[in-house]
Length: 532
Image (tube, rainbow, N blue to C red; front, side, top):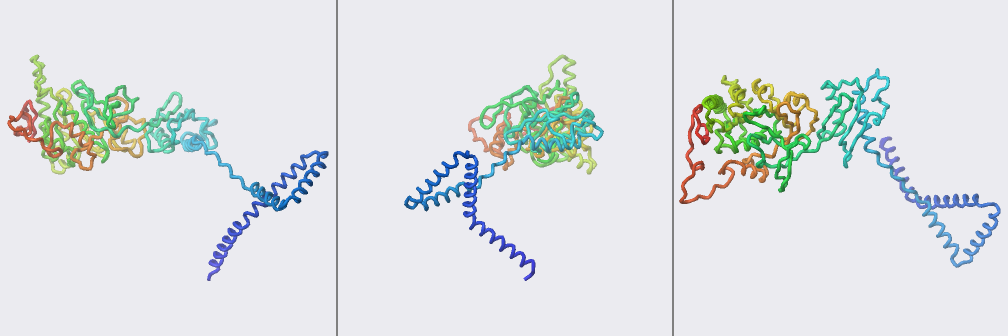
């Protein structure tokens, strides 16, 4: 057996023997400690007794001892009582629990130390931030919630800090968000005149709002819902089975809109297709649709053969034909509107009815067209984008945020209503929205969460309603039923067929009516017909 093994076994035996000895002699140590405390108490009492009273005290003590000795079993009872009293007095008092440290002292001290390298300067004679400084000198106010998370903070910074540079601001915002928690969104209000920064943790937006009919005027589209302070408007909604009110994000379209077209960007799974379905369900109430699914995922198959939906194209050939027809239709509408104004007559109904062009990931088709040597589908959008407001044609383009460089310059220049969904870097958000965002996004966001900027207004948060694909069996049944109830008519693919009605003539507009074939570029009928 090796020496190390001998030493290890010896150490284990010594530790075991010590534990047994400690258990064996613990009662004796307890009683001894109690007797020592009794002796200390008796000594302190004797020293506190005046000298003229010590004699009577000794006499009374001796008389008490004699009485105890003379009693039957007196000495035994006295010893038992003394041992019991010593055991009680000899107990070790429980250590007082240390008070819990103040949450503000812990977290704000760490935040102050993290900000010091970015807000301190070696040349500063009286620095606000220094390694041995205190956060109470620069933090004017703070607030924590019940879980100990930072809700609000106001801090000061030195005047030489470059608060006008986005990079310097981003560094400070990143530090604050990292110390306060990346699971929430924070709004940063920089007061450049007073050198103050106000940080506010934003409450989460509701994610359980199903698709429903929104109380809006014609031409108004509800993109989602935002904070109560971001808008002065509230609309009634059905939430959790009961009525409620939520602040909406309204996008106004039509001939008097300053932002007639929209561009939505997002990562995979961020909810851009959900946003497109939300817009489509609202547009079908007063207009017609032409859908191009460049991704080819079938996310918009529920719109096929619906009244008001001209076509849903997934192939490059079909998309080129549909967009070419849309360009010619835009020109026809412009000519008809000009003729009506020249003659002083009302414009035809098929000209004033809104036409919506919904494109999901058109850059996928652009790459395919470039590989096959065909025209770019985005080039066919130039006429609807430039003259769509006068012709009542609205274009909605949805694509991946990493494909923003592949979107044509015309699309980027004419789509002044922007929506960005999902997690994205600050640089990508600034490029997509056109201005720096004063909100630090959370590390993880639910589907449909993002930011919207309509025209030149400030960006605001947005949560898209849960408009799921009714053909998706994995989606909750209540959400699929809500979307089905908003579709123009019953669809045998998602709903049971309606019972036959004998002795009844077929009505105009029913599914039993034979489809009307229309050629691209021709004038369409009063009732929209699918493109073939």
